[in-house]
Image 1 (cartoon, rainbow, N blue to C red):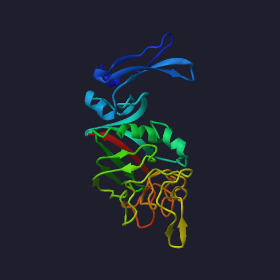
Image 2 (cartoon, one colour):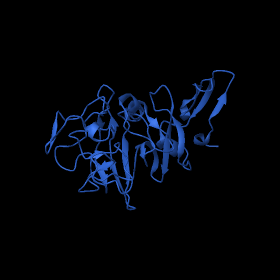
Image 3 (cartoon, rainbow, N blue to C red):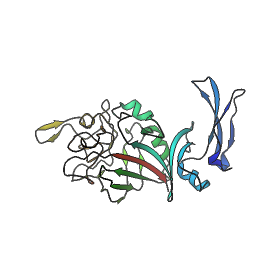
Length: 276
């Protein structure tokens, strides 16, 4: 049995804390608040990349990870691909999970790991905070016509909460276009903090779009949180629009270097990271 295939087990009798950290496998006892029982979780790696490295035949699914320096383990969805294990931190496929959330919820995370979800800014920060490690971020996009596209960024990391989890990305590659740095000059989102409707960290005070003055980008993007600048050409946490209603909306799942000229809301999106 490989470490990544070990099951989650429940114990009712005693509080156990067993560490096999030399093998990056730690048993951590946690309390199940709903059942009133102690729950022992098998930590299967520091991230999905390490799990795939330790167990090359590991399949995509939910795993328990504990990044270095993080006190409590947490669950993530791992996409186990040919080029390694990727930790998914955003998935959109429909309107079932609303993304018009406030700061505290974006920090903690929401949704369902096997379906649409946002992992949480604090967890993504934990995955990228060690400067001696580097992370690649990948954005996958699906349109309503059967097409797909991707964008990858090297040296991805987030700033601290005091820095509003500001976005830092390195070199781009892909076929979706570099929407983070912008469809046109002056809207680079790299280096900007995360914004929500109740915590504005964008670069508009205001921004003028024709005869419209925009102060808070999150409002115009359907209440979705993002690393807005002025306001930017990448935003994947706005309102999800169905087929036939996906073109022309100011809110939406936008990656404007990929589709246009009218605003195009993607059918689905996925954001994930792997360590390199």
